[in-house]
Image 1 (tube, rainbow, N blue to C red):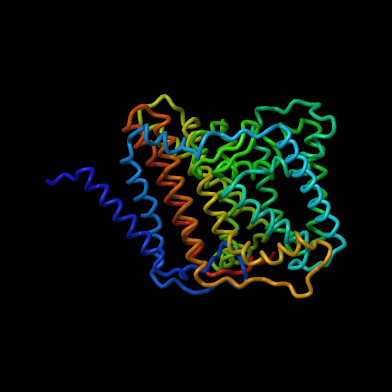
Image 2: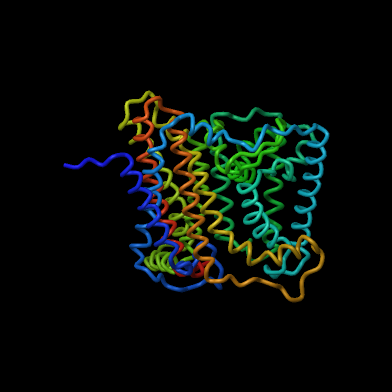
Length: 469
């Protein structure tokens, strides 16, 4: 029997990876961009069988994991995730203070305008300053900036600016809660976005902003700005976790530039299951919103409502149940890993150590989900920010070309490929044995392949408006 040499396996894996990518990108208009949720998205069917399209997507992630398993030089792996363009550039305290003040003033101004114009401006979402800035600006564009460039929310956060100027921190935050309140908050915000009129009625969005501001300011004053915005505030935790993927960081230590996603390997501030749940919810909330905006998702909701279940209960069941399944699959992968290899690491330890790879997946999902949305509304966003007090008489919304579907496929795959490398690097930082390091990745890669197939399936489906909402 002929035994394959490592060189042959590497060639096989490289060939499989290239073939998978070519078959996925051979028809750039293959996907309907369901995740973007635009009414004008392409409704074209796949030019290749859907099973082949999904299989090659999963094979791409599997082949990349196979190739990464042959990179066993620990010094090389360490150099990759520690590489930076140069030594950290020092930034004076005066410059940092000026940037924080300017950012705080800007954040407060945008928040005040969003509330004021949400009530007094036109109640048409496509020309509303509040709707355009909150969803095209913050939800789409600023979040992309956070993981593609740098996390700057600490300086811009208007609520932190207010709380930092008044006495705060009268009660100690219960550390046993971890970031679970932020998980609940993110789930609640996405539910409000999905199930209420905040995206279509500016006055409702303004009321939601006021309510959010009251809760945030009260909570931050009671437990302290640092504890609240690091552990509880869903917007801050949401943007901070995405910001871990960013190549640029500016903090008290100075300015540094690393390869995208490599800080996920070296940052060790994820500590418990609550932090894992934050990473999982970032992946799941995009999957959920992608599902309910497809024809198949709408049909499933209608069928369940047709048997007598209230529509909002159906959405809630899919939403919370799906999150539980996603979190359960990831925790199961950690348990399987702990059983398969001889290690003193507990399943919880492994779940925490490999959780940063999920943030790379979430960034790829978010880019696929919102890039087209951001581009199509970019003229309206520029007008809103440059002339907030005047509504355009002729709103301009760009029509996306069909090849944008290919970009969405590429964004999903790039996020998963980066996640494979992050998991590979983390495995070699965790286990002294090369065999342990390689074997520890298999269950997590299996979950990544499942996520990949699901996300590519959603992208391939025709879009539809969510029923009953």
